[in-house]
Length: 304
Image (cartoon, rainbow, N blue to C red):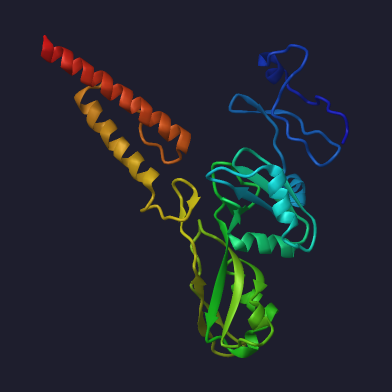
């Protein structure tokens, strides 16, 4: 990579940037020798990256996973020993992202599929959930991409080939691999394929399979043990209706409206559908402090 140079940096940007020997800008390093010129976005310095460059930068992480420890974690050395003992096909590198998350970078697709489809791994007394890494991955947002076994009941036997099954299920998601027993021909009763499904989008439940020039038939697609995904807190394992954080935020928002009707001087933050856990806790503490203050004033007034 060529040396970092400030090219085409507009005077408008330089005029308000603090200068003390170095200039710090949110520069994204591109996988080419050419440095992108800085620009301005909503009054802040920025660099626009093309989709091609972003895809090229993300290519080394094609078979990467994120392991999440919700209740403590073992040491990084113990985590690496655990994966070394799994007898995987190729090398797997493990690095610490933060206290709860580790980056698991696989070389072989087979190792990637094996680790991902397991879902939850037990490392001693610690449980680790595994999610696929994407360009949109974030520490506080679990990926909505999950591996799900899809069954095609009563599918004609001549469609049990890999090419046919992958073509049928490509409308559901990205097919990963076939069921081993079905692929070996020992279980021709039902076709099963593991498919990468985006839980944040509707899932196709049937598809028309037809021969050119003939009348087709509807093929039912059955998802086995598909997990719920909450669009409010971005967590796997429960729906939006079952989300405790969503219920709390709605209740807090109702209290905000009621309090403002009685006393407009009371300020309680309004519910935000994209609030994260830390922000929710801050709102809750602020709400309690305001309520304590109002309660103390009421007691003083009654005493007088």
